[in-house]
Length: 298
Image (tube, rainbow, N blue to C red; front, side, top):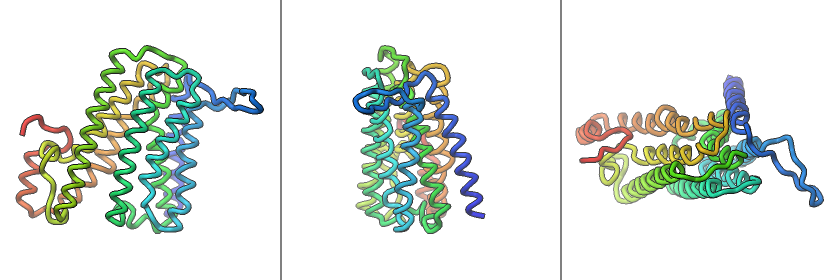
């Protein structure tokens, strides 16, 4: 039964990935193959090649991760995959401009910081509760890794499409606005993560909850920052997109859905409600503090 369920989910992921590749490859550049110093044009788009990299990396790392029954390299692999696909797209692009350079830089910077932070956190904690049950079953474990491949492809989709697009335009004020939003979102996420890391070093999180710093303005400021920075990336990418490539702008909507409905906010809110159901201080904090969008005044 678990095999059938895993098979269905993998098929759904495959269909979504094919749709993303089809949209992202519109007007996109084809993969260049260098053979004996002769450049040959492939029928495979650079965007499609990035999709293959995103999934193959997950499936390769899945094998030793399952054998060792460990999730320690899950987030690190996700971050490395972002870096691999975005740099591959940039290097394969026949026309690189300031937009392509900035998109490559901001995705790589975000991936390096977040993957490193999450890797060190799970190493210190010893485990990630999300994987406590599924890592002992290959098919359930494989779902997490395959979905991560789709996560990389969709969230980075707009950036990859813009980098590999043949439709190049000036960076302009739209690009500046997007870059500013990315910077604000990146700083919010980084500061919030650091504040919570320091809080965990001083307090027992089983009995105490963080309500200082950015966490006094939002119950999940790190997720707000993550959503904001991907909106910024989509805005930077937008002017370079052509026709069906605009469908890759689903990226920030996908991040919003993932972090608010599937994991992230919904999961942590459920855990907090169970842990501090009888804690009057937490109930007051919950009523006074927005779930996601920070309040400007406390």
